[in-house]
Length: 283
Image (cartoon, rainbow, N blue to C red; front, side):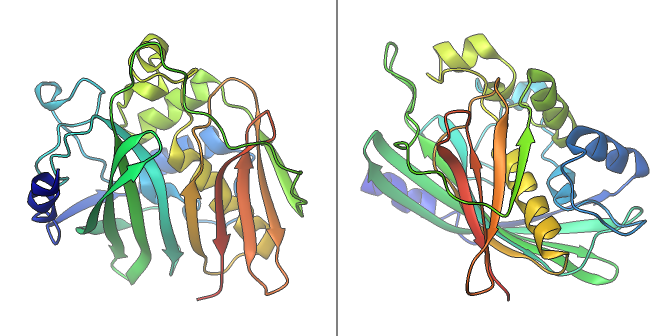
């Protein structure tokens, strides 16, 4: 295993660029998918978190793995662990994106780490992104990916954290999590990961209790509830996934102002347990 991680670390520093155009149709599709849970924005500005729809990896069918993702080993390292999840990261907004912008995303593998978790080995890959328009840098991001072992047939699905006392919030949104919502987001992000739409696969092969709500769906809602509560302005959000959010029942997105001026935000499943959490502080 030590040999494998040393080989994987050779991917650190690899970089790539990709470009895309923010079209009116993309903005309309994004707004139709998330409304009414979007922060107010000026006319011509793209809604917050639209950047996750831009320049997605587009692999031919022959280059897709069994889980629906593009095969590893090109930009992302060839991690042997098969299950891939969105673990969290950091988002720093600098300036709004606008409809009609040509956006270039500059990406680099920032770090690779191997850890032993309660459920087995974990490999964390940190990818650093910078999104640039003709006006300059619009957004910086660190995206944390975690790879895990394959599920063992007959094992229980990953458990949510223990129940805790309800957290008080200044603003709460209730959001539906129907398969149609997940499908629409997969479509506008060109995300073919089967855990979001293929229930026989996600339950039998990956061991989840049902379809999994995308990590960036939750992060999109967290960014927008922060902007709604704060009234706008730059955001620097550090966030992490706690447990998978299973689709079906509505879930809650919450935000609360903290005494130091920061804003805490989190998502809760129908059972009241936290699935993703983060804090936004002034830069």
